[in-house]
Length: 228
Ligand SMILES: NC(=O)c1ccc[n+]([C@@H]2O[C@H](COP(=O)([O-])OP(=O)(O)OC[C@H]3O[C@@H](n4cnc5c(N)ncnc54)[C@H](OP(=O)(O)O)[C@@H]3O)[C@@H](O)[C@H]2O)c1
Image (tube, rainbow, N blue to C red; front, side, top):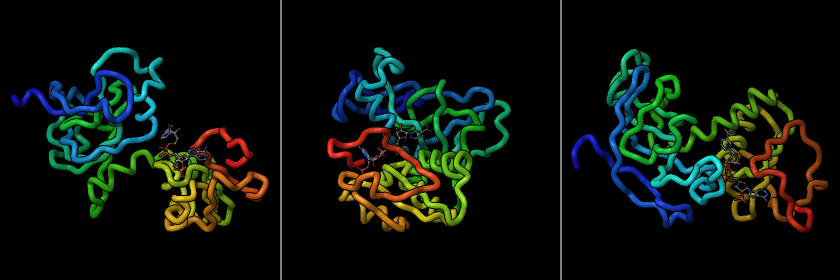
């Protein structure tokens, strides 16, 4: 393979995970203000699954092949003009922006330097790749809800990408955390620090009590029995 090309995960039609394959695409060059990143790991979040399945085709269109991956970790390997915040070799994490679209499931990505940050020392790059999606929980609990110690927090979808971070953050912020997850995930979310973990398929809203802050990552659907 010549060094102007790289491997990337692609798909030529909407569908399940079986539509994915590893193909070749041009290796990107960093524009002014951008860094070129050698990708070490990327995560798959739920919005991407919806895109690949074709449920967002109003936005994703009908042009193929399409790419996957938004979140990533890796090392800076080149700097565009004026990208002075980082040095070659820095371990960074980030999220691709709306303009670049999907594509972190690849050997390299280019990204504006302000969209990436340094991975804390001691944090493995594979583990770190699961965390960018979790920044939504920081925005929701700290910045929007202003969660305070002693408040009662309910996290719906607590085993998910955003929810599992919300449970841990809620606990770290000193809240009394109730987590809703499917039965198989109840022990998992309890292990993350939830004071109370309940099966969302059987518990009824009226049985939950009152909360100061509710973070609902699952949406407004409730089951036929009224369980949520
Ligand atoms: N705006 C942003 O910045 C941003 C960023 C990231 C995500 N999001 C959005 O946030 C939402 C969650 O994302 P995510 O990555 O955390 O998704 P995820 O990993 O798929 O987690 C969603 C969780 O919802 C639970 N769930 C599904 N159906 C449910 C139901 N009927 N009742 C109760 N719980 C149910 C599932 O729990 P069980 O498996 O335990 O059943 C699952 O763990 C998505 O809509 C995503 O697009 C937005």
